[in-house]
Image (tube, rainbow, N blue to C red; front, side, top):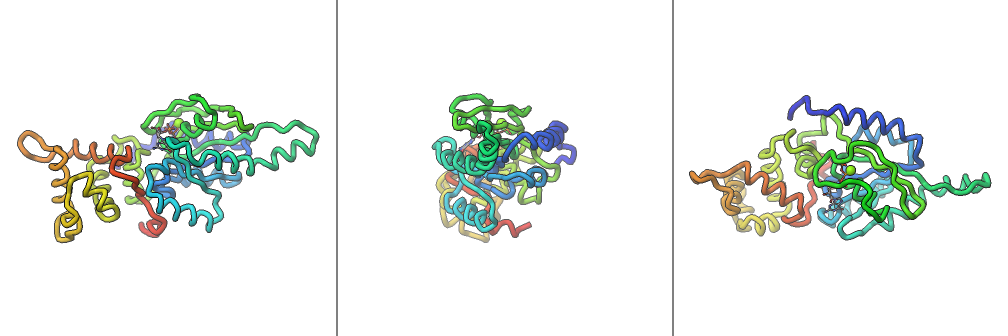
Length: 291
Ligand SMILES: Nc1nc2c(ncn2[C@@H]2O[C@H](COP(=O)(O)OP(=O)(O)OP(=O)(O)O)[C@@H](O)[C@H]2O)c(=O)[nH]1
Ligand SMILES: [Mg+2]
């Protein structure tokens, strides 16, 4: 990884997050349901610790539902308020609104006890890039206020958005941290689409993803890449040979007959991110113990 990748605007956004924290009653921290813990920025967590936090596992429609259920059970044990949402299916949003209202109850109660009219609950939506913060805000607002794109780094400045349910939300830019965790964590973060593709080695990410799929989702891998179950189960086969076979099956071949490694890496990563290989989780609860 390029050591000098950490952009100045992220450091600025982190500072701004800290400064604006006093303006909100609670924080909605988004993470990617496919890799919940690895997609949580420790620097953001340290800052928001002093506020009530609701952890939202986004893109649950792309994740393995069994893994997501395990994660939610684990967060319950850890006393973390966590829930899953899937924007395309509009699922989980009602529960999120309830959780926000519950968390903001004392703000409203305090205002009432002073004879004041209850003001809107204010929440800040934070997290790493491309985890669906702006999508979540648009859904809760019921209109397209924030810009959304499928690439990291779309939101560049904090912005307040009013919703009809008595909640005002602040959309924040996605923020990463300089070392991005361990090698394992960096690879799955990159595969998920949280890091700009030019920062890490695309072929390395694609091959690591392929190996993870082979181990955990062999049936899905076999189907999408036209490999036989026997070939995938054969541990004597060099995984790179299998990877090349998959590339050939999908037509990623140069005119001389060699594998078009760049094209295949792009294809595999794109199909993973679009959910075309299937519902895949890149991190299980027990993976936390791995380096
Ligand atoms: N499948 C699926 N895609 C989602 C979901 N939520 C967001 N997306 C997609 O993820 C991409 C990023 O969404 P944004 O809302 O722009 O993410 P963001 O966190 O605001 O990103 P930054 O502003 O770059 O930090 C877009 O292509 C969204 O359509 C979801 O629940 N499921
Ligand atoms: Mg955004």
